[in-house]
Amino acid sequence: MDRLRLMEIFVRVVETGNFSAVARQANTTQSAISKQVQALEADVGVLLLVRSTRSHTLTEAGRLYYQRCRQVLETLEQARVEVHQAEYEVSGLLRVAAPVAFGRIHIVPRLAAFYARYPKMRIDLQLDDSFVDLVAAGIDVTFRMGELKDSRLIARRIGSVARAVIVSGDYLSRHGTPQTPDDLTRHNCLLYTGIRNFNEWTFHTAKDKPVTVRVGSNFQSNSSEAIRQGVLKGLGICYSPTWIYGRDLREGTVKAILDNYRPSALPLNVVYQPERRPSIKINSFVNFFTEAFSQDPDLSLAIRPAVV
Picture 1 (cartoon, rainbow, N blue to C red):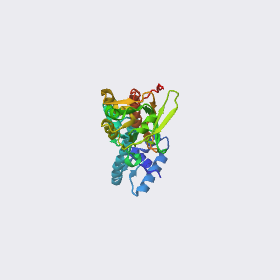
Picture 2 (tube, helix red, strand yellow):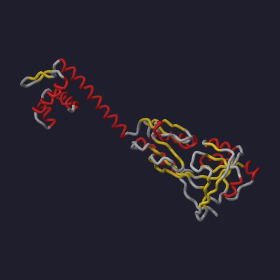
Picture 3 (cartoon, helix red, strand yellow):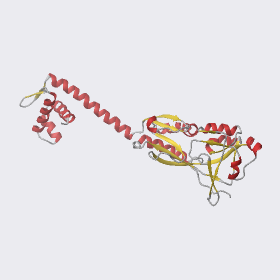
Picture 4 (cartoon, rainbow, N blue to C red):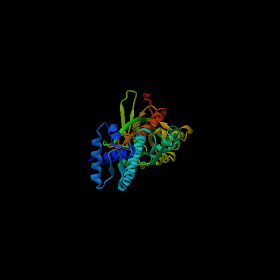
């Protein structure tokens, strides 16, 4: 028995005043509508309508039941409207995760422009350099750099992150300047552990021949901010995304070395939960930042041949 359908018919009968009008609307017979109301009365266990030849009258129980049916149907209709709006209108809460420095430098400064385009959106931004379990944390979408470890997740590549070998002048004055990737094995290299194979640094030459060196360190961290501070204090050399050191490079606090070798770029991905179809609000968020990042040379790497 489709109780909801019977409730709808009962409400229509009450509001139109007769069975024949409802029958015409439903493209059926008056007898069929009458039988459906009788089925509802049998289900409820009370008489809802007192019928006469040309009209019907609500019983006391019928009047109460009609009011409740109206409330139920109005609630369901409101739920339908809200779900429809959530599906086709860019609004509501979006839970986003990202590495700490990436969120500080690349997401937060762009939120004003995002809200100007989508004023009904709300963002809950979780910044963490460690691995975030999307399901356990209730995250809708996250930004991840490097090769993805979890094949169960759905990923969309939105850019490539330029990297460089970066060091302070103080460190170079004390230890000398490496001239080739192999020279790095004799230097202290600060290691960011948030990516795979973090102690293997890969470079490309003009012939695009990859050169990988395994480096050593007395300091490693899962925080890119901690690695940056170590570089600024002259602790060693890092192999890092250039966007982390944008101001430092411009001000000359640090410098990029080994210009004749091209460090391997990092893929930049947005990742979703596998069982969640991206909603319009997720797609709008991702498309906005994909467009913004495409105009940033540090996040939309144009591959340049090395000099060697």
